[in-house]
Structures are given as structure tokens and as C-alpha cells.
Image 1 (cartoon, rainbow, N blue to C red):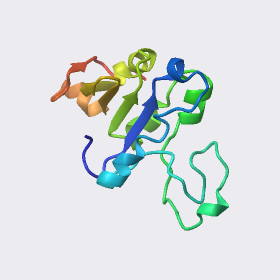
Image 2: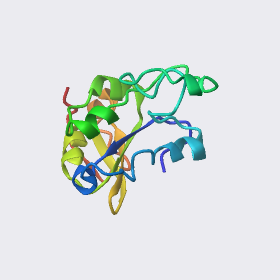
Image 3: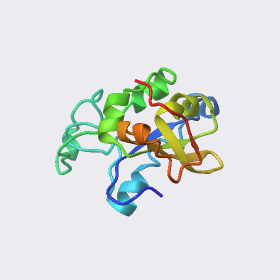
Image 4: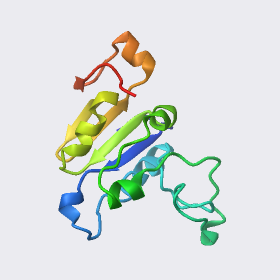
Amino acid sequence: MASRRRSVLPLLANRSETDGLFNPYLHFAIWHTIRTGGRVPGLFNAVGQSDATRPEPNFTHFVLRSRLYDPTDVWINHGYAPLDWSRITREYQFIIVAGSDSAPRAMIAHNTCELARTRDIGLYKVLTRTDASAGSNTGCLTAIWPITR
């Protein structure tokens, strides 16, 4: 599990499995917030779940100081769209990929290193420029250098 109080970007890698039906992984990463107090995107709150959603008047009792980058809507509905790595490296320490599609794992390979995997769930460390220049891949199962932008 990712460390306490860390930010985790969940990416769904099961488009071919859901075929437009309910996605069982849609809100799975919220357990990170519940169990560790860490942050994930998409939390229900007064200002909306993401930059692409409108404010939610029913959630005025939940206020976030700042919203994390959340590519979920575009990622799910428009294929595996390119990710904003400048925001990811600023806002996240970890990425968790859920599902068996291999394309998302290939898309993040150059900017992450895999820490753990069990069946269809993989945990990845987001690499920073410092990690890349130091060649730091401590604890990683795999790593690809350098970070591309």
C-alpha cells in the first residue's frame, strides 16, 4: 500500500472488460483516503470532483483546499488519452493501475517504476527529475530511464 498522507493517481485499465457497463474500479482508490488519510482525485465535494465537472451543491459540507489533477473522465470515455506529466509529477507520489489492459502500463512506463503487482492491480512510484538524474530505482521491480516530457 502507498504511504500514509501521500497522493495516489488511480488509472483504470479495464476499458475492454467493462464495455460501457458499470466499472467496478471507478472509485476503488478512495480506500487510500479512508485507510491512510492520503489523497486521491475524484472525491465528492462542493466544488466538483474534477476540473471537468460542475460544483455539487449537495456536498457543501465537503470542501477541498485544492483539487488534484484527475484525468478519469477523459481517460474512461475517450480512450487512454495522453496524461499531463507536469501535473502528475507535481501532485502525485504514486500511481495505481487497475485492470488487465496493457496500454496504460506502457503509457506510464517511462515516468514510473513498478513497486508491486498482484493480478490486475499495479502500484507505481512517480519518478521525479531527481530520481532520474540519480538513477534511483530503489525498491522498483522495473524502471526505464530517462523521464520523458
